[in-house]
Length: 289
Image 1 (cartoon, rainbow, N blue to C red):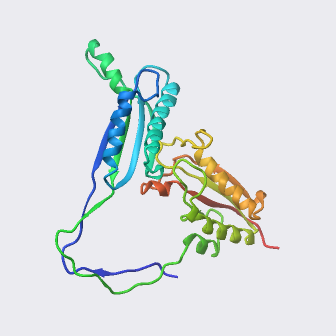
Image 2: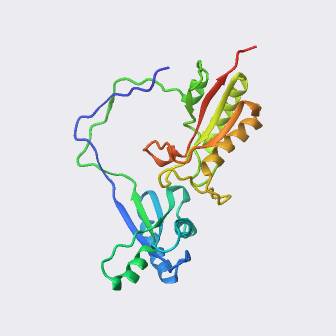
Image 3: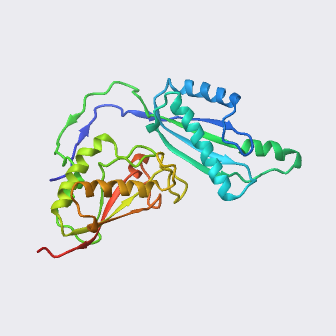
């Protein structure tokens, strides 16, 4: 079946889109990820101010000063980022729009004066918050209604359709409709029906062997993300194992499957939710009996 093709003709000016970015910083004491009362008050005021806008996504990045080992600073900066996320959630900000929560480690000390060192280090012990508003549509003038010239219906689920075609070793199938909640290995409720259908097909294709590859979004370079449930930095593996366990529960034999976590080695450079994904790679096709 062909993909959807829609031709639209507009009799007038096009729509203009604008998107704005709002930033805020929270500062910490040395060796601490506890948000001080004055900083908490500032943060709550900031949270209240953004509740009046349409938020697209929120990123939170933790930082440390230049003292301490790399491992210690990464751990501490991650705790600072998560401490801020918890305050956002506690003040009624939907956790699903907090797409980036990551510790960046230390900020290199940049100062020419010994007198400035203490102040600069204090500014480096922080969490940075970036709020991206949803695109705002500005209609500069009235538009004539669009004229639909041609429309063809797209398949309901491309993954299911692909699995029903002839497969070969090396084929990689992205489970496009299998989406995960930010920071978790469980799929979103709207993905359950699709995964159930995929399991049914894989049970029938009993000569197909494959690897389940888990991915995450929003981490620094190729680092894995933290599983919110277990607090371990192995979220991509946990997502792959979730799919593995589900397929096994539906009758797919375990000896046909393996699962791996690929961290953030292969980002799609688009909407972060699409990087929170799982792919199936065909590794062997046995002769049918």
